[in-house]
Amino acid sequence: MRLPAARGPISSALVTALRTGRTDELVPPSADDFAGPRTDVWGDDVQLALWTAYELHYRGFDDAVEATASGSDPEWDPAVLAFRAPLERAFEAAVREAVAPALAEVPDRGGVAERLGALVEADDGPPLSRHLQRKADREQLLDFLRERSLYHLKESDPSAFVLGRVDGRPKVALAELLYDEYGSGRPHRLHSLLYAEALRAAGLDASYGAYLAETSAATLASNNVMSLFALHHRLRGAALGHLAAFEATSTDPCRRIAAGIERVGLGDAVADYFHEHVEADAVHEQVVLGDICGALVQEEPDLLDDVLLGAAACLVVDGAANRVLMEAWGVLEPAGPAEATTATTATAAPTGPTLVPSQREAGADERERVA
Image (cartoon, rainbow, N blue to C red):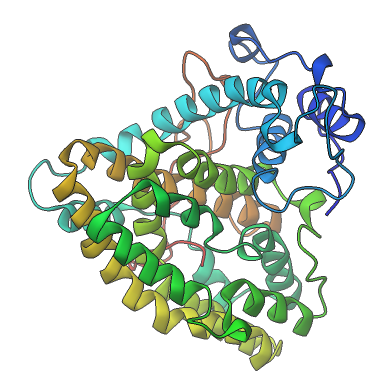
């Protein structure tokens, strides 16, 4: 994958430095940059810059220099990390503010699984999978597959970073779940490979990062929040809480998406990825709620709030990405000022994604999240 085309001055500075090696010329954004409308934390420029910085820890970029002006590998170049840090701080603050209303509704009694379950059940995000199942045309389903390829072609890789940050029962259970995600010893059943096969069967490009240029800022944020949690030891609880909500809201949407794919005639080879997750994620939900998050909080009680933070972030940030996609298709009315809640903090710009859930379709009372 090559470095992306910049979407503003912040991403341009980082991309240029990685391409030329002149990381010594990077000037980290200041707090003032996030104090007004000049820089939207949820916008294209910041989210692409953050995604690019994080991607150095995954596959990297073919056209990035092997050694920067300081002689460092770009992944660990001090100037790159210093440039990333204020972006992370602003993003984390914005995420925390965005999820505060959801967290305020979580009961203060009950076990970890019960509280996570209450958080998931209370979520009322845009009905994306129901639209894909019942009404989406072929082009909308292809658009969905392209948009989600940014994550699913490296599926579970953020969670793998967390394995070394926990111990005991949570480590064992997480390793068990990741073993399944990575094909259970069968390379051809690697979930990211299944998604690549689905893309090819649909006539799409299965190259890693092929559709980055057209990926929305909201979807970049959905990816970035996973990396934010996974790459910081202090946020390990949030990383696993995010995983819990991700798995707990996957089975029914995957079933619906598979039905929509078959309805428009994209074929079994495209639907196979989603059929695989109907069965797998039903099992994963129980593992991650009890054996991972439950055991983690039992061993480290102080991490309960972080676990809930991560779960809420999954629901809220993914919900915003779903809304952006549906609004682009013209099947969901943009939220008006009276109903919209934006992610604003002292260190974040006052504009952000719509984070208030839309009204559900009649009878659509099941949990909703993109697969």
